[in-house]
Each structure stands twice: as structure tokens, then as C-alpha cells.
Image (tube, rainbow, N blue to C red; front, top):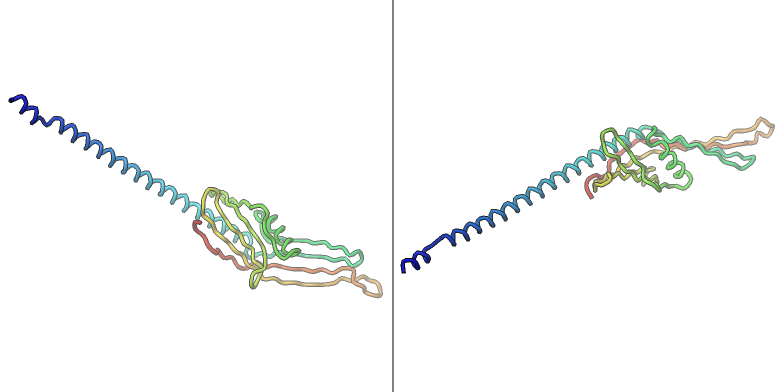
Length: 205
């Protein structure tokens, strides 16, 4: 009888179960803590990457402004009356980085009234990741608008930069030295004076 009572009062089995319960609870708490820490770390890294992307876009925007604002794009078209031929010269109004792209844009704008880039332009600034720029040139409500939509590869950050210009035109005819003083050519000069730069928006899509 005493043996039976001792077995009934034995708490070792309950202690084992209680210990297992504590172990499981501790494991769950540890897993939740690690998961939260991992999520927090990932969010922090994503936030840093997004912030870096915005800084990169701002650097590219300043580079575009420095390249274009305060310059003038000149289109000189000469028409020859004698053989009805035309030549066109375009001075883009930008330094090396945007020179070729802006020359094509201004020439197409003069001929067709608008331009849309068929392939993105890559802009690289010292110490920053490459920036992709889609750009267009068309008439706005009051003046020609050159618009760059900037993005960083692998990031959802974007920024839109818009440059405005006022336009001037000049026309002149040249004459021969014959008695009739007939014109043999006319020169039309159109100038886009890039005088304003605005960052329209920037952030995350």
C-alpha cells in the first residue's frame, strides 16, 4: 500500500511535462523574436537602399540641370532657292554627357514638333549607381518642355526633371550680285533658351 501511495504522489512525470512545455514556449518566443529581428533588419536595409536611390536620382537631376540650364539649343536651316535643297545645323546646347541625345531631340522637335526617346539614356555620376533616363521634348502650355524621367535599376525610386525654354526665331535672305538681286538662299534660325529647371516629383512608386 505504501508503494502505491508513493507512486501516486511521484511528481517526476509532471515535472518532465512542465519542462517540455517551458522548452516549447521558449522555442516559440525565440523563433518569433528572430523573425521580428530579421524583418526589422530587412526593412532597415530596404529603407537604406531606397534612401540611397533617392540621393542618386537627386545627383543625376543636378547633373542634368548643370548640363542644360543656361544654355541655348540653336537650329539653323538654310534653304537654297536655286536647287530647292535644304541643310540643317543643330547646336544642342549641352556639354559632353547630353550633347548627342539633346541634338537628336532638338532636331526631331524642329522637324516633327515633338520627340520621344526610343532607348533610355544612362547617366553616371561619381560615387553613385547608374541612372536610367527616358526623355522627351515637346511644346508645353507656354513653352517647349524637355522632360527626363529618372530611375535606378533594381529600385522603385523615380524622379521627373523638367526643363523649360523660351523660343526665338530669326529669318534672313541672302542675294546674288546680279542686277535683279534675286535671293539664292534663306536662313531660318530657331533658338531654344533653356532657362528653367524643375523637379516635378520624386519618391517611391
